[in-house]
Amino acid sequence: MDENSQLADARRLVDDAERIVVFTGAGISTDSGIPDFRGPNGVWTKNPAAEKASTLQNYLADPELRVVAWQNRLTTPAWTAEPNSGHAAIVELERQGRLDAIVTQNIDGLHQKAGNDPHRVIEVHGTVWFTRCWDCDDRRPMEDALHRVRNGEVDPSCLVCGGILKSDTISFGQSLVESVIDRAMRVSDECDLMLAVGSTLSVFPAANCVPRAKAGDASIVIVNGDETAMDRYADVLLIGRIGEILPALVSVT
Image 1 (cartoon, rainbow, N blue to C red):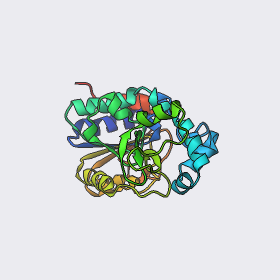
Image 2 (image 1 turned 180 degrees about the vertical axis):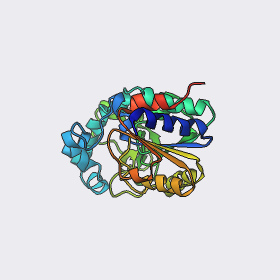
Image 3 (image 1 turned 90 degrees about the vertical axis):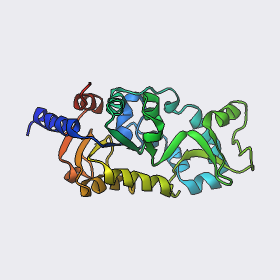
């Protein structure tokens, strides 16, 4: 089957769907200037210390590592990144009243910035836009802590209990939030189309959304720059530029 035929088939599935869940990974945000983690230009490829800081045990145990982590947070690309055409296509699905939820592995907040209802965005790996105290669970905007770092606090502590602050993201070795994962699985069970975008679909339990949707008789469309671990579930598999493919899938009404 040629690419145009596959695109037409995928577009028909999208047009016919009434309860769509979009699953997104790092690939949808690379066109916005946010690098992935393990690719040739990935965050951890270029800066192994950043990967070390992403392991919870290391972060909690090593004050010097936290100092480096806070300096890195000052220049996180998410602060200035803008949504791209792929994000805009998903906003259009919501505008049409056919988007049930977005399950995202991303922590950049670009779906909300693009205009999607924050209540529809299920952030299974958390968000970089907030901090959380490891000791008392106090949660505040990240900018509050970054302001303190700019003013000379190299490792800002919790203002409530003095505990260790971290980004409100899920680190290696940290438990996922059970209620968030449960919701991701529930919307996957209930959708009639799963549109998986920009993910290798190899990180669990989030990747279970695809087989869960398939088991519920949903159609599966996978859009990615390369093959994924879940290609066997796809009714249509589209390999290429996400920022070009997604707008082509969504009819503008």
